[in-house]
Image (tube, rainbow, N blue to C red; front, side, top):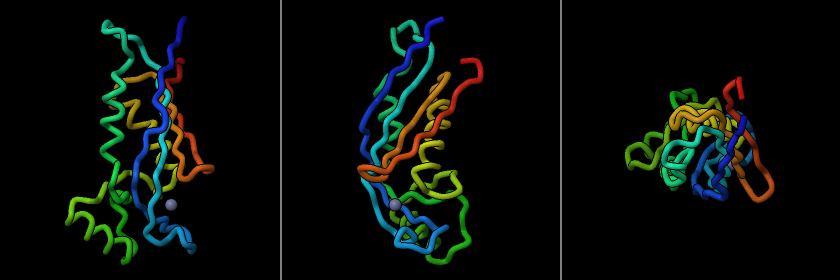
Length: 143
Ligand SMILES: [Zn+2]
């Protein structure tokens, strides 16, 4: 049985975040040029593609030039103040993760892309800087 993998590399997302779980400079609102690499496994459709690369890029672009917040997290006054301001001006992206870190974002993107595009497997690597990255994988059990 053949398995075909396709990928997109070096999708750049400029976004700010706060890591509310630490008492370091990472608790302050700050930004990164996050670099995202995506590998996809799926069936090749009649059009010859597993999925149109442009659709994956379009999905990821929704996160570009935004401030990333944890969806539903309201336990921190400073965090909530930033969120309110960013929501008001349309700059907020609410993301269903426990903490906005490269680890959780890699897992989030892998799961979301797999479900949204009906793929068999997705691996996403998120670089928070030039040397620091996390990889999240989401695969069907039978591949
Ligand atoms: Zn950071």
